Structure formats: C-alpha cells, structure tokens
Image (cartoon, rainbow, N blue to C red; front, side, top):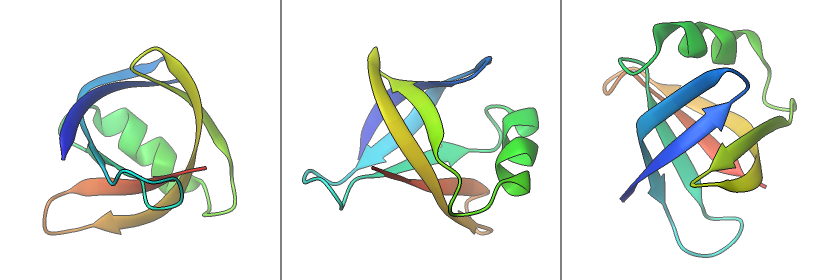
Length: 79
C-alpha cells in the first residue's frame, strides 16, 4: 500500500493508503483516527453514492465499499 493524501469536500486526510494498481482493483483505506467527523459522514452515505475527491492533486471519484472494524478504517473503491 502507498501512503496518499485525499481531500473530500472540506476534509483533508494525509495518511490514507492506496492499494492496487489496475483500474477496478484500486482501493483507498481511510483511517478513522485521521478525522472522526469524515468517518461519520462516510457512514451516512450508501455504497451507490459517488464521492468526488482529490487524491494527490488529481480528481477522482470514490464509492464506499465497507468499514473494517478491526483497523477502524473505511475502505473506498476508486471509479
């Protein structure tokens, strides 16, 4: 996994991790310890909601995949 920065609306996370190389396999791991308010917002959205984001300065679209209770992390898939 590669450390990456992500901006979702007013939320900025510097310790997210990007996993996977090819399109359709790429996942973004957002630790809830980085911004608990963002994690509450992600919990309110469903898996079909497209989430505009900026990853390392590039525009992307994220979709909520699932919450990992063990690591207290949201797993997002990149469109």
